[in-house]
Amino acid sequence: MIDSCSRGWPAPAKLNLFLHVTGRRADGYHLVQTLYQLLDYGDVLDFELRSDARILRTGGLQHIPEEHDLVVRAARLLQSRSAGRRGIAIHLRKQLPEAGGLGGGSSDAATTLVALNHLWQTGLSQQELMRLGQELGADVPLFVLGQTAWAEGIGELLQPVELPETWFLVVQPPCKVSTREMFQAHDLTRNSPPITISSFYAGATRNDFEPLVRLRHPAVAEALDWLGQRVPARLTGSGACVFGAYARESTARTAMQELPGKWRGFVARGRNRSPLLDRLVVEDNR
Image (tube, rainbow, N blue to C red; front, top):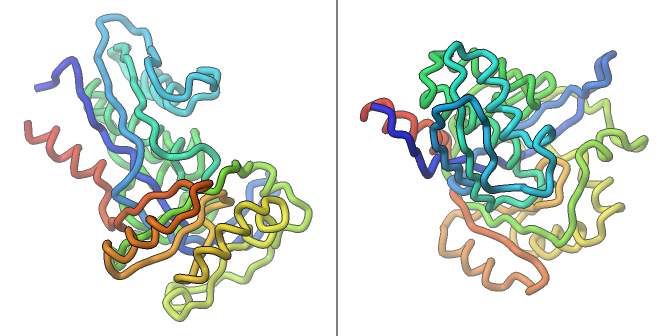
């Protein structure tokens, strides 16, 4: 049974436990290797079915034009593949920072695809939704897949990985970092040699964006240094957020209490399976 209102669909954050840029394709897209770690913290979306075919945005990033809003674009893309042409009102409860390297916009788009595929009864498979997601952004297929994963290509070649579900402190400096600008930077390392998963476990990894972001955004450098005095700290994505891993939740929360007032942060647990998939199972069993 499908209710007209469906609330509380999770759009979890991700961390890049490492990020190597291994090359660049002729079309300008960069080739990467990374390990995506999903978290149990993120944005939340509410949906209300409409009797007409309109797609309405009732909350979220109102300063972004609808034609650039990934949530609206995801809904319109799925609607274009749906015979029913039903409408939807979407309310985004935003918790993740913009331009933070946590995948918030991509995760919001993926949750929209997964939720509306269920609510509109479109009947697309997960693989079909992942292919749609790739039209919206390189990270979207990860969130549709809903598993912590090793990624290659432009980020779309995904291999699920089981990791210890450890705790993370994520620190948000008071700045935004443009992914586009970082990828276009002339001094970005673009020839990191490919590694194996065993190399990751041996610690032979880094984030190729970190030197650039440190130079261009002193607030990120300061956050990395502050957190690095406590645990190994790393940039996620192209920034601006940084993170450190903790064996216990209590230790991570103690560290968060010590955060300077000029920074924000949150504590979250790593998840091998996305809470979005758990929500979909609940919906399918109703």
